[in-house]
Image (cartoon, rainbow, N blue to C red):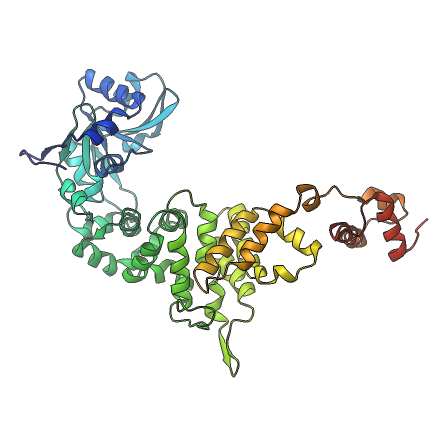
Length: 461
């Protein structure tokens, strides 16, 4: 794909497909690069977008690196935002698209395992050599198809290898988050991790605890909600990172299950199989976390008696443990509650065929039920393979009209007040039972609902 011509300069082999990808780049992106160059500055695409173009994919995001200082960048473009001015980063807005434009720089004096104490403007070669991995250290001129490779990144893209730029111990000591990023790139790209890089990750795994919970959460989500989720979790376990950041998930390994329902093996293997069944693209991160944590309570509830292996109360304990994990990783309240709801409901599917119409309808209309249904499908496919309850729910969703699943209320609190009832806890009980009767097809009008209330609770006026 790339051919060395000396001096670290590698032109891309311009195959028809690559020419098509370069021709498909946003015009606003190309115009920014041209404007910088016409003003006498060097300017290139850098990082993941170059890697993906060489891999055969059209990137979603693009980063630009240049010899122009931040104030020179802002003077060249009318719409800019100094998002990281101390690091030489300016956001350029062109045709309603936003691009990060960064000045060539080196970084020195990492004090907290994440951020440099000092930034010094530098050359293109110095800039890429301070980056994390060789596959992210390539520069590309999209108009000529020329790649500058000072770090051996072209060869590592060709060999599908994640390798740090320079000494892995130094790279990981500068920024501990790179420990997780190495795993993420290997999993998402289906690459191997270079032996020296892998060894350094294992030796420095404990350092990941110095990174903020938010950044850890973001990397974990990218691991489990993107391609290669199973392999990502296996690499986290192999490197020792998993026990540092998710010991509750690490504990699932070796928790044996009844082979009749779980021929796949222990809870860890069951979880990995489910992650492997997630779609390659478009996975809702909340569903991915639901898959990862749905059985997390089994590690602390397993019991064995003469009747076999049991996990009594694993759902309740799973909700408690998942809440602790997600609060520790600082999830939003909305995401936390969604994942807890997935855990809470995942065992209810085994009872759907015995549910009364009112309970079934309430179950089918819970918020984001499609995620609950998908988690159940994955749960079945990742174990016994029986999808009868899944198909039953799908059929009912088709059979039951929307107006029967969510019918207008026959009575409200105002009706009860008019009937002489005083507001209080009894209101909710009465309205729930009235709706039960409605969902069960026993009543269908306001008059019938009032008669039901009088028959059960007596006339109040």
